Image 1: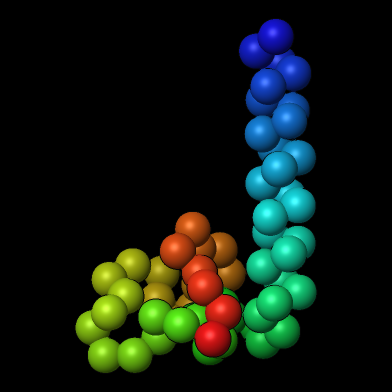
Image 2: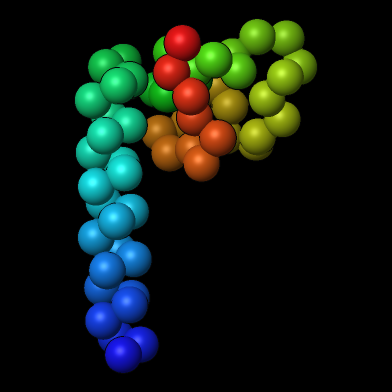
Length: 58
């Protein structure tokens, strides 16, 4: 069961990443993120994140 759950988890992550790429047409997610102002986002990947669990489109 562990291998199946890992496979499903990987599939869910790939689908989520695909959806994020559709919502963020720019090269970097930060360019179209709701949290891209001031000191709201504290992530070290900022401003060049290509993956982010906190991403919300504007």
